[in-house]
Length: 238
Ligand code: TMP
Picture 1 (spheres, rainbow, N blue to C red):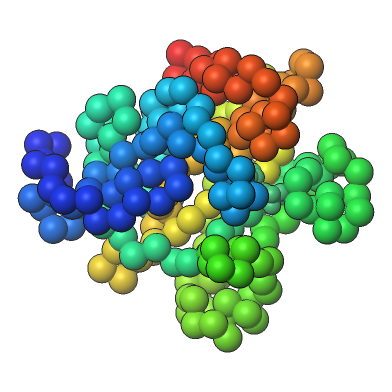
Picture 2 (cartoon, rainbow, N blue to C red):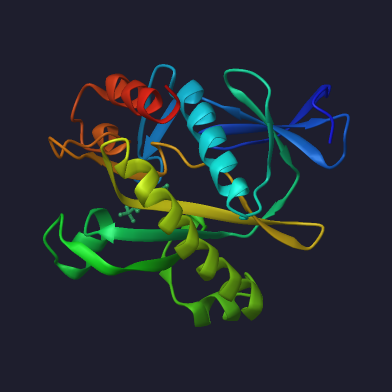
């Protein structure tokens, strides 16, 4: 697919990204905004240059995963904030992989933050803002017709494989990959990784200090948010 595309009309605006059509019907432009939300958009703000960081970090990680045989929607990075991707139909499931206890898992199960999860776990959340993205089981995925059974199995296998690839990648960069969220899509019936992988969608703890280096700094008002995003960019792409 060609790199030179003509940007068309906006198709969709989400909380952190906009999608534009192009002169190629199978390709869209994903534009990364600086807008930040948390708690189902009850909290809103701006993280300066977050869009640039998330675009570049996602590019690096999509390339790494493609090289390891995981199909992704990524085609080319077009600019600081724009990425050309295949036009997939997103499966409305947020797939979360967890290596350490944190966030909603700690809350839901009353576990202390930081404990190792061995083997890592994969969870599904129904991507539905009106319902607040509830945790769902595999049976619920089938009940709601979100994906067919073989697709669910492939998603679980790829989520685990992606984790196996990303944990050492971040470890080499002095970041503990605590947990992360993935979204998958279908492109002419073919399953592939989509959306983004960035400090918005991952938890990273600095290996030395244990400090959060991700969107938790915004969620929990920890300060030095921009610095953390820039430091992740430097470690991932620098
Ligand atoms: P959680 O502990 O709040 O369930 O979050 C698990 C992971 O998923 C964490 O790395 C942050 C990411 N995440 C998103 O990417 N989008 C979301 O809307 C939420 C709630 C979490």
